Image (tube, rainbow, N blue to C red; front, side, top):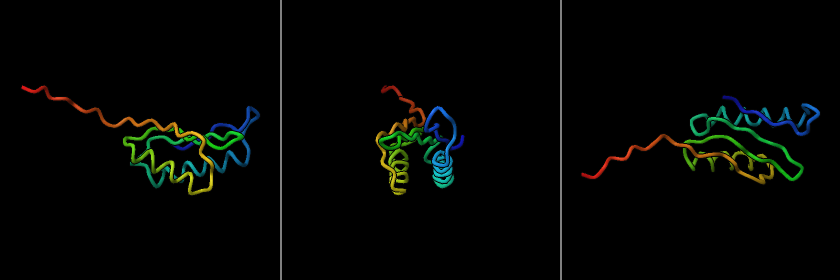
Length: 91
């Protein structure tokens, strides 16, 4: 599970894509316990962040980390999928 970036265009990698890939890997390296995947997708209007987090706090940390780098986040599509909670019937 590593950080990755979607291509800026269908024509292949660019220097900007490599920078985004490095950014995603850096953030993952420092916050691996909070996020399982991180993907930064570049669009003409800003970036979309995608991934999986166990908590809503982890989702917010990822948003904050990307914004600290001066990127405009137009969508936060990080899915919060924590550990399943078992329900004990009252009885």
